[in-house]
Length: 424
Image (cartoon, rainbow, N blue to C red; front, side, top):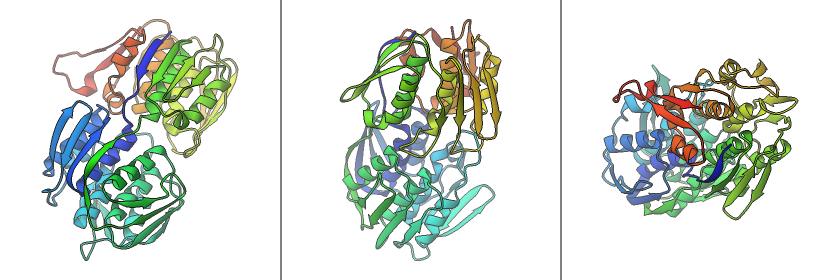
């Protein structure tokens, strides 16, 4: 059982767009509440390679000055490792009128098409070419021009990328069928605090009036909805009681609602939630949808929890084609789950036992840790580097809640891919 309090870090999905957005600012951006995770470290390293000055005020507050940055190719050995590399397209097009980067990397749970990104950049006047794993984009006259863009499907990445590109374009851009996630609002708020004119973020229609330049300023990133949800599920799965601090409860409503269906008690306060696990978890059906629906990034964690619930639960993945790779790992621990395309049927009540399992991706890794906390015996989770992409001090925070978990390395200087989490 997990007991105690845990402090939630800044939102990964906001930070990985806000850091590239600093490229477009003339002056110093002070960004507070940056999560200490490998994805943000990599993006800051990329900015440094591009000529930005990056100074740490403290571990979670950073000053970024991109005033003197000149256009050059981003370091491909870094950009190919993270999904958020595609935000460099919008930021660099907005700042320089040109961009070149790799296709997005990161977690491998399905194809990450960027057709909607390309559609948006093309509508703004850019010539975009994808070849040999690279994306090349150029504005023929050096600056993008406002346009009306209808997204064929709701896409968080495309919505944010088009916002970035349109901020310094001439004229007005209107994005219709835009995604509504909290981190989109956070990106818009960051840019507005630096002099942008963006309205409607958080609705399905976003309007951007292009400005000549952005100035320096200070901004604090919102708390991480998915990190908070992960600790909520961990508390519920283990039958514990955890106060999760530094959150925006409204962002967690879809997660809280599903946990309550399982019998878990969730009490909301101004900037925290208290989660009390039930003695017996009940079944629940889940379908992932764009915000404010249940987030796809919480699907694997809930999948692990539902293995312990009584009855049969059905999980429908409404966003990605291949997000059930983690199911094979749960089966190694004794879970009874059948997958057919985008639907998984979970026969609850399984008695999980420790096993050697893989973190197939970031959120699958978190699911394996949650399952390990509930299993008898020792669970070894391999490929820890996926977890470190999005969770700040995951092992330390869990141990502070009473977990018995440690990271081991075969050699002191081992690469991230060789690190293993042991849970007992």
